[in-house]
Image (tube, rainbow, N blue to C red; front, top):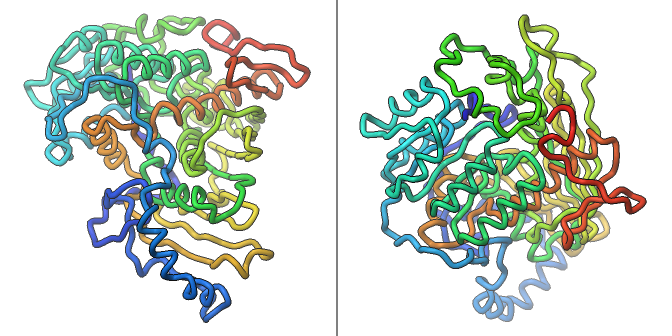
Length: 495
C-alpha cells in the first residue's frame, strides 16, 4: 500500500510556525497558533465614523460582556469531546507506526521525524506492500524500526499508540478501521474513504472506539480558516449565503503521470493485496501502481485528491458544518493530456470538475478543480451583510462589508495569521488532541460530512444526475424521489 509521492499545492508555499508575540483572535483556544499580532487587524476607512462613536459610547458594557463571554463562542468541533476511551497523559510519549510509505507516506515519516522531539513521539514501525518502500522508511526512522508487509501484523504491535495512514485510497477505510479496533489513534490521508458506505462505517467505528481520528486536509489547521469560523460564528457577515474554493493545476505531461520505477516488480510488491478491494482486477501493472490517481477503481480523480483540500476548510469555516441535501457535479476531459507522454494509458477520471453542494441552512458551496488549467479566483465566503476573502494558505482574512451594510460594518484585514497550511502543524494538532482527548481540527464529524459531498459529487458526475441526500436515513435519491444505491466496489464497470 503506497502513495506515489507528495504533491505540493501549486498556488501557495507552506511556511513554518510563526513564534512572534500574539493576542488571542479565536474564542475557542488559547493556543498561540491561532493568535495574531494586534496591529495587523484594523479598520480601513481612514477616519472617525458613526460606528466609532457608538463603539466608544458602549465601551464599558462591551468590556464587561467580553470578559464574561470570551470563551463562550465555540468554533466547530473544538468543544466536542470524543466518545469515552483511554486517555493518554499530557506528557506521555506517543509511539507511532506508519501504514503506507510511498511518496505521501514518506512525507509524513520525514516531517514527524524532524519534529519528533517537539511532538514527544518516537517512530517505531512501518508497513508497506513494497519491500523497497519499507526500506525507505527504515532509512529515515533508523535500524530499530520494525518493518511489516501486512498492516494486520503491524497493528498487533501493542507498543504502537497511533498510526499514520497514507495508502492508496481504496485501502484508507479498511486500514483505519482495523487500527481503531486495535486501539490505535489514526491520522488517515484524504480522501477519508473511497466510497460513501465506507465513510459511515469509519465514522461509526471512531465513535464506538473513542479514538482520535484526524483526516489529512492540513488546511483545517491554518489559522485563517479558524479566524473565518470565529467571524462567522460571531455574526460578522450575517447569514452565510455561498462560498467558493479552487484547486487548479496544469501540466503538459498530464497530472499524476509519475515515472515508473525499475524496482517495482512482482517480487518486490504484493500486487494481489494492493488491488484486493477493487472489482476489476488486472495482472501486475506498474502504470496503475504509480499512476493510480488517474483510474476510478483506485481513486475519484480530482474529487478525491484535490477537492478535499478546499472543501474541508471551507466547511470548517462555516462554524457548523452540515451534511448536504443536494449535490451536483460536472466533470470533463477535453484536453486529453495523457496522450502526450509515451507509454501511458489515458485516465478514467476527469481532467476538470465543478461541484455545487446545497446544505440545510441554505448555504451553497462551489468547488472547482482542474489538472489542465491552473489560474483560478480566490477563496470567498459570501454573507448577506459581508464577505470573507481568505488567503490561499490561510495567512490572511479580509472582512468586506456589503454596500448596504457599510455604515455598520468596517472593512478589516487580518494579516500574518499563523500557522499557515502546513502538514507539520496539522500533525501536531493530532498529537495534541490525542493527549487532550479532544476532537482535532479535521475530525471525524467534519470529515464525514465533507466525504458525503465528495462521494455524491462522484455519483452525480458518473451517473449523470443530481443527488439528494437524507442525513437521517443516509439514503441517496433522485430529484423525483427514486432511491439510488451509493456507488461502491463492483457497482460500476470501473470500480
